[in-house]
Picture 1 (cartoon, each protein chain N blue to C red):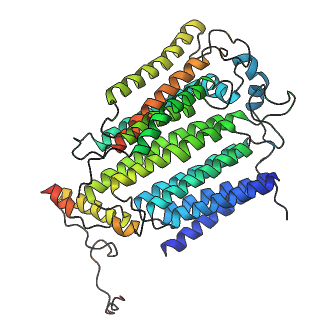
Picture 2: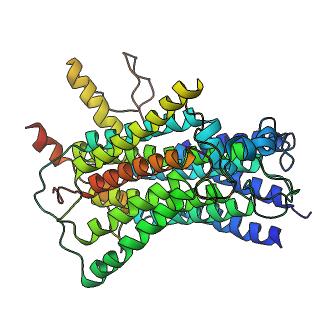
Picture 3: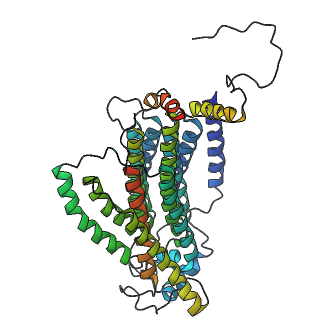
Length: 228
Length: 101
Length: 152
């Protein structure tokens, strides 16, 4: 009965969406605001990657909101799980896991920083690089659970990065009367030091996301042993 | 050519999506969800969205799988062989009474 | 009928969305609910990216490829990028909540959880917990026809 109702509901939803398909301009989008960004984004912002330009320059406020949502989620995970005393900790990983984590840690760190710093030139940016950084710091924890990660240090980095993001925004507010407006000159399109404050913002986002997600994973990892 | 690749990927993604809902083992379902994310990220590349593809591959296929697997481990439901995820979840609730007492 | 590229991807996105919604409606296991939500999310993301796609266009990155080629719309891409990262945050929160619920009640079955929840509410209010979900609330005269024996 319940499944029949569900099937009917899904069928109806699918039918409506399918009918909608013939009215949507898929494949030939109207580009209401996108056309302007494509036209002058390169000159106005100075970033070769227009998605990053939209994320950090045109819609910088959205990114700030997203960072706060992520912060709230990570904090809530820590709050909901609670911090219990570790009674039973996981055994140390085997030789392969330990050697692999030692080998992977610097490589992941370099890749993460590269992706963050080249966010305005190539695909990538703060979020993707931040996730890679979080992975870089999480792999050693997997190999040596006893050592763990310093949650205090992680929150410090996280807070510092968030403050840097807002600080750059406020600096732009006082210098140019617009929050998060890119400063420092645009530079040459396609060079590493271009697009003004965008790489700095990207760095802040990357550090914040990385610290948050690493803390989130370790707090999920720190099991209090099997309870039953 | 592009159509063929897209068709194969869409079939892969949809069948992995069915597996997510059907597989008894919850760990298998998590892996199937990761396959869905990976296929979708390749579809993003075909749609000329490399940024989103990178994010989906790192976050959807990597991080989210790790989070879900750690959650399963924490729940004690991470059993790969011969398990019945649903049946194991329905353990008697004596623990609750213990906590209440 | 030959399907073109956009139609194939539309069907894929729609299929993922509908599969996820179907899972959300039918599943009785809390953890699978989270997975179904992720499935629907992937479908919606695909649909949003598809809305900005132009045939024969190049990625919205300047300096690669010929200058006069059209580019795809960057705005949906930026939005979806945001949505993916928020999605994983929400998912982690949901997993944490599921862990907490499992610690408290020892089950993740939605029907059993509902019974627990109603029992808790009733205990807090100081009234008798509902005995059965099938029984209607309030007083009602018994039907003259004797109830059929329960099928096993």
